[in-house]
Amino acid sequence: MPVDFNIHLPVHVHGILATVTFLDIFDILIVAVILYKIYEMLQDTRAITLVKGVLVLLVVTMACNLLQLHVISWLLQKAVTLLFVALPIVFQPELRRGLEHLGQGHFLSSAVYLDDDEARSVVNELVKAIKTLSSTKTGALLVIEREMGLNDISSTGIHIDGLITADFLLNVFIVNTPLHDGAAVIRGKRLIAAGCLLPLTENRTLSTELGTRHRAAIGLSEQCDALIVVVSEETGTISIAESGHIRRHLDTESLRQYLQPAFSTPRTGIGDFIRNWRRGKK
Image 1 (cartoon, rainbow, N blue to C red):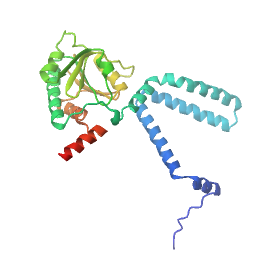
Image 2 (cartoon, rainbow, N blue to C red):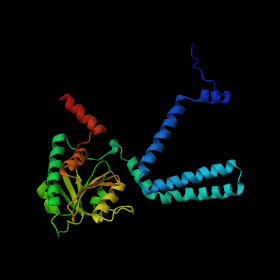
Image 3 (spheres, helix red, strand yellow):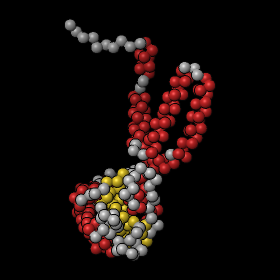
Image 4 (cartoon, rainbow, N blue to C red):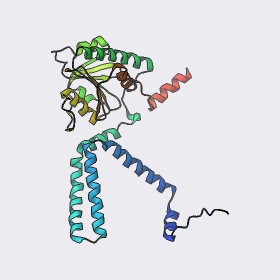
């Protein structure tokens, strides 16, 4: 017996579907991607709780309108209006971070990446220095710049611009020296500044075991895409802060796995296209 695959839909539904074009579908997909990216940016932050509260308030407002609860509807509508005025103030850190990420396109990127051999060499020097700092329980804070420029951070410290070696980094973090307590900023294979100041995180749910260095690392990672390495002065524990999260108690092999992509991530900008084309012509 043949199966009838025709779905009998109401006439008004057929009318709506008949007006849908490819551009409408494309428009919906773009909106879906934008909403997903917003959720991805806000998840695991305090802002997601506020978003849930706003959604609940909107659902309650719609329900009151359907039930014709005029007084409550009027109050909720006024509250929602005031809320949307206050949202830019409440979400100021997230809005700033979102706009900064929007400007991180590879086409406009000033990030410095290295070829595989250079990246491997820099990572080896970093791992060697961090391992020594950890064994001697010397506190250290190293910021590795990626897509987002960190000139505003490096300007708070002392300009250096030196080639990265393990011995050089160990000298930077000698205890009781002016550069020891600040952060060192790394761009490509060069240390561009040391003794830099980082913003502290406002996250109040963090463990009390985390000191100022760890909170500064998390604070900067909340505002940009940098990878921050922390060596604890009390325990010698090696930690990595990225995207507002911190991963602690890393061994040298785990540290290497985090560092390598930060220096050798493939680039797709127009400059890289031209360079690759020239290499192919040789």
